[in-house]
Length: 471
Ligand SMILES: Cc1cc2nc3c(=O)[nH]c(=O)nc-3n(C[C@H](O)[C@H](O)[C@H](O)COP(=O)(O)OP(=O)(O)OC[C@H]3O[C@@H](n4cnc5c(N)ncnc54)[C@H](O)[C@@H]3O)c2cc1C
Image (cartoon, rainbow, N blue to C red; front, side, top):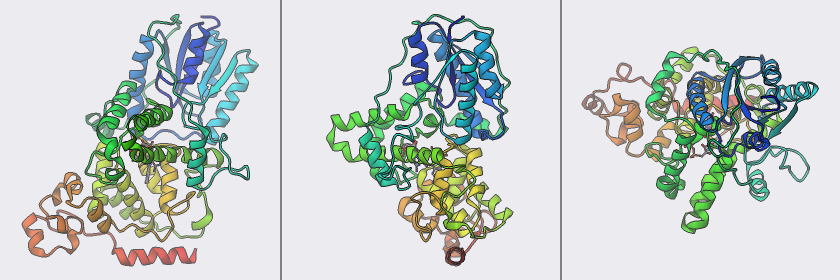
């Protein structure tokens, strides 16, 4: 045991393309893996859906690590104490991890590195989460990027490192230790229903990637905006927990383009979405606290409305705008929501309802299985109009027109808002304008079986524009 390596796993719950794990294995002195449910103040605790995912992901990782001869320890508490304690207990000579990027996380990791070195262990960190580390690309002026297009160009020019292969099973010296099991993280009871919708773990992530490349990539650019179609990869929770790396996804998709140039445009679109993930991490790294502070002061003096009842209706999918309600119910049921609908739901909340984006972000943080430290606040700020390279404030989505455009036959709405299933496509996105006989024929009683809209779209749009004009 003495002289072994300790790998501290965080958002990288995989064996393949795991640089920290690979470097520990390469030392050849026995490896122990550690996961810490961190409770230190200042670190953002995972939401309910993420806790549900995490428990199962750790169970799957434990099995895969065991096959490779590596034990996984799971602890709960302050990593600044636990990591050095475990390193000392195991007499580890080398402790390593893949980097994370939020300011508070970096402070924690830096403090731990110092303690470990003071205690005589070697400590090292590796790039394992994003395509390109946030400090590796800089504008001509040497600062961080604030605009997506030049950032994307810089990422493409930087060349994304090829992924590392899966360590061979049984190739390691088993490092025995007294197993330490942390208490369960406390999943909310509502999260149990998520099991119906997801397979978890590294193998499931790889299968999801292959399924996407084989079946969906060819139509990605056209289908990705159609919520009724299974046209996107659904890789976001796997990427969030690092069951697959962004580099693995990048190179697998790029290989398709090399083999089949007809798909090149589709691949480009997909890669550019992956770069948005990096762009958000770039902001997370370079800014103080993107989950609570506006990145730009464009909305600084805007007065958000305090409307508990409207917030509650939005959370429950009872706004009276079918496509938004469908999305919010999809989220509650599955822990995931289609990207187009996320934008519509966020726009309705922050603009038509004038409710602070932070409240929406927190709800998503608690209910999304892919709730991500960078991409959740990054996208909320983008929609609200205070993010980097954000949508212009006057771009207020009209949920009726957007529904008609992206869900033309209403299949998505009818799936998640079954009380509207009997309405014809003409009315399914605007039941509040449907003639009485159409509503009666479909069994819809507005205000009873389905809510009337929370706001008038035009009046609330004007109100949002006025609120911005005075801010
Ligand atoms: C208000 C709002 C909140 C969001 N919160 C999150 C979040 O917490 N976690 C999260 O991963 N994504 C978030 N997104 C971005 C996006 O909706 C999801 O990444 C996407 O829907 C996941 O589905 P997919 O894996 O099938 O995506 P695909 O279309 O298959 O894209 C592949 C991957 O690219 C990345 N990606 C795609 N779009 C974006 C984007 N706009 N921003 C950042 N990365 C992107 C994701 O990692 C995704 O898995 C949010 C978007 C909005 C509008």
